[in-house]
Length: 182
Image 1: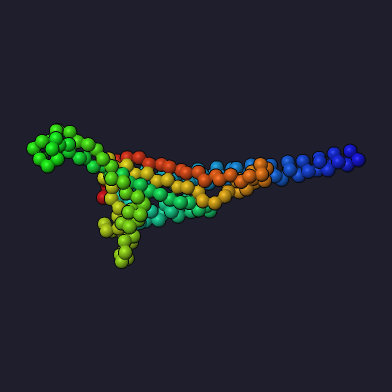
Image 2 (image 1 turned 90 degrees about the vertical axis):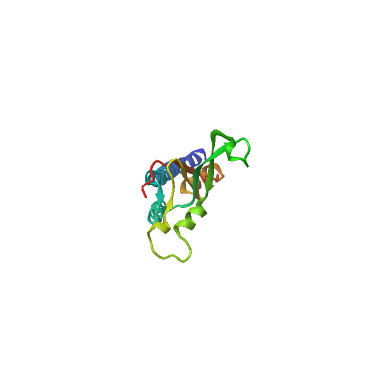
């Protein structure tokens, strides 16, 4: 009886080692490749925006096509922090009381503001100054993407450990705008 039981256990372990372990390793490599592709797309887009100082509809659309090419669904958020200099006064009503210093403030603009400039209501032409979102040198621009849904790696490891964990990683990249090439 014990030899039959040991043969069944050996067969189950062989199936596990022959099929399940390689499937988990393949899923791991696939997930790493998807993350690298998405991160390189984000860095390429953000660096282009930082170097050019603007976002055109064609730049945004090619970025979205590039991250969707991997077959995953992402939530994309963009943030533009416009740098403003506010002079400091002893009395804000009297301009003659200027202290000789400035306070730097950032005006945050989210993705809905950027997209409303790129795709305004009633405008059909694809490119042009009206559909270009312009940034200034010294502003900050950042993009973050978050994966929606479960990957094959999450599902396979869920079979092993009994739980499927939320693996929604956020990839964030940004920096200061360097040029105004518009």
